[in-house]
Length: 494
Image (cartoon, rainbow, N blue to C red):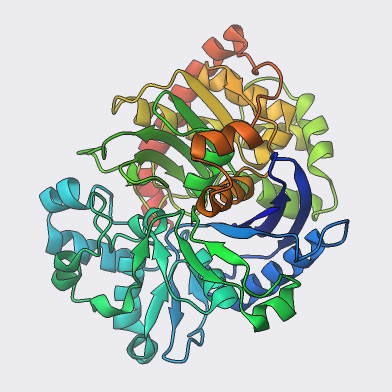
């Protein structure tokens, strides 16, 4: 039995699969984003740990127990900053990927490094929520906390630390912090020197399939796992969901709508983007990378609407039913999903969300469909931006929680003008982590064997309605125009 633990932005999920890739156990715990001030986004690592322990124990409610687990690995939300003191204690809440407090520090880093260095060596935009600007914000605004930092970890690496007692990271998550060199995987000492951050607070980085410790007696007592169970390093959530979708090489791409939204294209070389409105990070295998377009708010927008309009009382299935009664184009209503700023393609933390075109005859279903369409328009911007860099996909695989909605899948296919393929896996990132555990253990010869064992096509692809596609092309241009014409107003609204 192989266990995959996925630390997401809104929930933690654990799966257990057997050697044949069959799901044998599942557990999940939800939690919220803490927003103490506008633009801030934090989570308590202790809540992650409690969720992890609870979800693991849920997996043992059937016919399996901790003794059956032969290896464990991880997937986790990217970029976030967990601060540990000298005794391994947590120094306050983790500052996560959608946090926007470090705008001034981003500007300062850009001035120090210069655009040419960022384009050719960092290969990524400097953006709030990443570890480097977050740490500079802490240094300048919470100097007492910063002075106590012994180690800084990415979110999933904190959970591994709690399970094994070992402090370490791995190359895919390390590359998403901006502190490590994208090409070599080693700590970027020159960058850290330029921005005046200490190198010794960053952990050693290893490959995703490397042994990264063993379950301790204390962790075993809390979780129900067996002491000494091997733990494999794992990877960032986007790398793990790609593996959980069987996407390993150029030619395939994934479009994920979870709390945020991501488009991922595997590449054989690091992609340099002079516009700096995409990301290039390391894959799970040595010598592999991927280019990614990212939205900060995707499924979170529908979750927000469910909360403020339905008081969380209406199921997503019922919301789908309401939206099905609204026409394509939502009767002229347009939704802009940048509720926490935006990365691809605007690279602007000051952007805001918007409903445009409200009229009295519109009902709740119209608003639900408008949110679905607006998120899909944003994802289309990510898709088209990535395609402009060269790696045109032959096949696009839909991933994330939005795949549970037939309507949202059809809206996406119609807006992208692309068939959307689906797999039998539902918890893609957690299953990807379980496959990595199997590869690291040696149960699977390589990723190809692991993916072919656990990941199978799920029926026919969702085909676009080409009449709707042509109609949505016009709406997409309005979507882009609304952003461009309101940039100044968004900034005034901060």
